[in-house]
Image 1 (tube, rainbow, N blue to C red):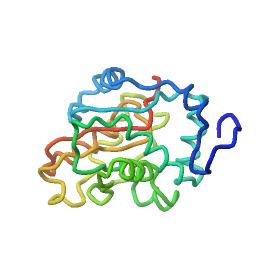
Image 2 (tube, rainbow, N blue to C red):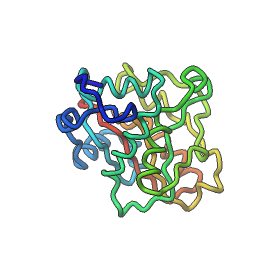
Image 3 (cartoon, rainbow, N blue to C red):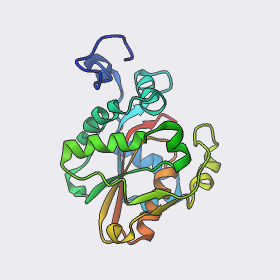
Image 4 (cartoon, rainbow, N blue to C red):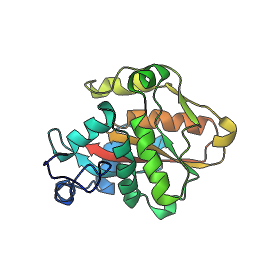
Length: 208
């Protein structure tokens, strides 16, 4: 998709050379990013597959997944994300960051749920899009100053099935980690419903 080389399938968004050029995110770099946000203490651990650079090879893929009605490529990307999920996490399920109903109706799908579907296929761990809901619409985090991001998403999520959430370990799944505010808000909602532990896995971590 980025270099113009035809891949083996429309569901494979990047050729091997493009994949090799994308910087991998280290566990330390992800932890350092989340350490800047006090509310991210709700996350027991986190992983990102790649580092996201504006205008880099990953940008066109992420935009296609999120804005150009190509959720099928999310399944492939999600399978690739399984490579960074530690076995020690042993989650009961993957939970995509939900969209509010109004945003879902505009887009027709949730890109995070597409990623979660791929993760579930690769690991055999279920995707549980049914356990968490976004209960109020929020402005896009893109372009918001760091100081405003937590306020934008605080209390935006709620457990949709508290009985299913309780006493379980969940991995919250999203496309790009920037400040961690969205993932932290989702984690707080799950913990408030009685979840035992929350992890985070994203396709990429923003460079800054």
